[in-house]
Image (tube, rainbow, N blue to C red; front, side, top):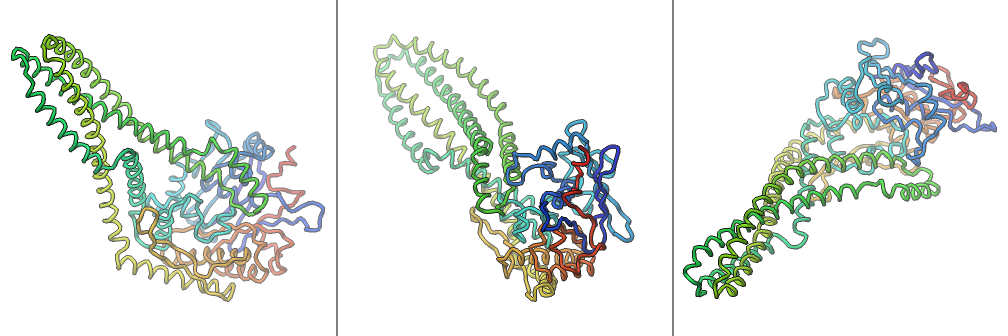
Length: 572
């Protein structure tokens, strides 16, 4: 899909309409660098943010401070909301001869006033990314990678994507998520990515649960303790049998013993359920404690201090925190659903326990007349204590074994997936696909820098001892300008590779801060974009452009301090 237009409007008038074309599309700030007015904050990057907003990003990306996501540019936010600004992005499958068109419209209002549409159809915000993925890439049927992950390399205006060629999602992204993404992007048929990520997450969850259960002892220690308890019970039963008890009490004592055993069984069941409930509650508390809300103010202060020392520090903390907290909330909500049923079972067992306890008191009173009762009572109390311990330890041991069985099943399923994923045949396929991509990548980089870049894959072991494909660039560039060139080479090469392999992809690349690149490379980049079937959309200061690119045919919009993107000043 290509960019056709970006429309900024109110319900009654058009504020801006940006029309895109083939090849190089420049968003320029024509404020002279020697002018007393600065060339900042005219809206160059905002154009890219608005396109990203239409592609599923939260609206805060347009008006929030990138370095402090809790702070908003209030003037911009109020303008967008008070004027009911609507952003409409139009995509087409071919610039010259479009056969398919997608129109995406969104605004910044909430609830009933919210506009979130694809081709005029209202879409629930929670379903928007999925619906957008189906509209843009109808042939893609996998859940992972997500639509936003697939297009991440096409939209580069934040530091993490401007500074990294491959690691472009967020700081919390796991190796296995990148593995799923790049196996898909490089055309390695692998439809088990979502299932594999779930299995790895489940294994981690069960392992944490097992650690909590074994907080006061290992599985073997509980087994040994149970053996000791059984030996002690046998001794006490033998001692009880040797007591000289009035035969008249035998029937009552037998019944009392039976009641106590049943009572202990109910007690053990209650203990087991209570332990399970406590562990669930502890897990919920643990998840809640992992939320970053409590310390957000302190973390923001740290980020502000860091930003003063390091201008290009990655500043997508709010998004990462939101993503992290959402995962924790979902997990807490999932495990919390078991609590009502546990409470109901414990309530029923408590009724039985109370009834048995009453019966125990009654029988105990009946046998108190025995002269040997005092000794018998000591033995019975000792037995009760041992049976209680046996019930508690048995319940914990049973839960540990249940967790181990679940982990064994998850690990078996994971091994079955990995047997195919890391087989010689699949490894050969990955190598072959990378070889095809690298042929294109190295040619583009050679044309741009007289250097041949490539991507390699290694099988590494993650923190949980599982094998994972890790992709990396050979020939990493340290200078910011050259890194920008490497990233652009990769994005262009990938688009050509995807077309060659019939992999669905976007045919536009959004880039910020292109003034960091050398003039010669900018000219070559323009030549490549104009030659290939690619839209390269870049924001740049006009006086930083080489003479060859100071041409209106490359411009899609010119901004300045006197004519900013949203024209807020004109509306006041």
